[in-house]
Image (cartoon, rainbow, N blue to C red; front, side, top):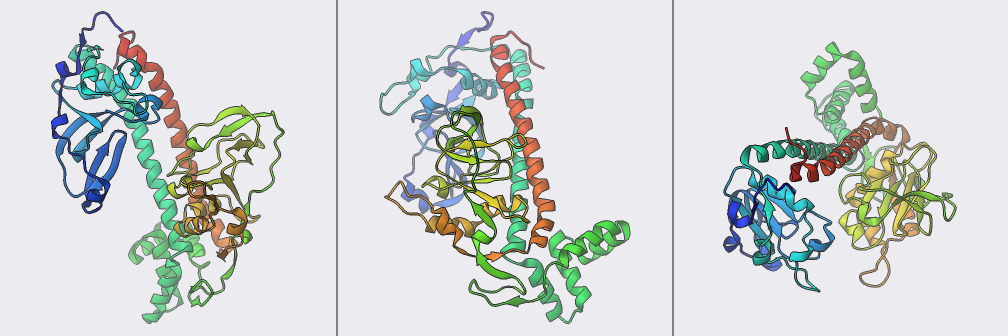
Length: 442
């Protein structure tokens, strides 16, 4: 680190607020569910009905295996109203910009010399406050923070955008294929005395989230877009029928999931071949993007290609939502990964996006969980049993119309994810140089 910057302890530049922490047992939290985040050593643990802190603070992990593994940041900021248990130190800044600077500094610092405990790693306050931290002058500190904050904020924006895209895609899937909102809109319009045109407009309104007046304006200003919307609405019937699954749209059929999805389709990858590898820890619990893919010689595992969906089959990964959409391979490339995946590929005529959105559907996941067998703690979903599950057979033409929207969301999320990875690499390269004074920030 730069010899021009004085070494200071945390207590020289920030206030410890550990005395305000209050731990709550899980049973107590269950009785106090609410809107305020409850933080632990590695982030938000729960949401409860009250708060202890109000403002901006830096939390540093006090104990837990994450102090060694660093799977999640050990220093992270919390803003607004929240509660903190006794597993995280909490700091309030004395000088402007200290929280940002300390967060970046601790992201690169090897804490091994300061951690105690062989079984349960611990970073106590006394040891934490012995760390000599090079603190640049305020103007230099602001400059460093501006540079790194710009990258952080863009990455966070991409993450938030992708969360919104995911929610929109799942909401449309549920509206069309679970709740049958366009069908019900037509039924309600006809029941209210409307004619067939009124029913179509009602369905178009539900599909587009536009009012009838807005649809009429669209027809005048952009007739092509209006006609495409009308064509989609026409794919939905105007009545429901009984089935073994309950009421379903008229003309739709009940079959098996195997009528829609190929489970664990055959892929070829010779043993020893160097190929992209995705392990379970890099499969997301939300969103479709694989976190990190590495090249590794093929040994034993599932094999997949672009357009496949990977569903974790083992507890608790399945219950936690671990699912990925494969969009990270080159054309005609085969990747491989954990033996604990179920590979899902939509049948011919169905676009690949439907496999991923189906895997995120609550009803589907419940069915997968119900097929689990095995000893406690090592239960696995059964792909063959899942394939035989009674399921609504979605009309292919309607699914293709759905894909025009869903695939766009997945593609945009992929672009954002790739940009965030590039920005993270830039940040990681800049961090040591900025924190050593080798480079000057913005």
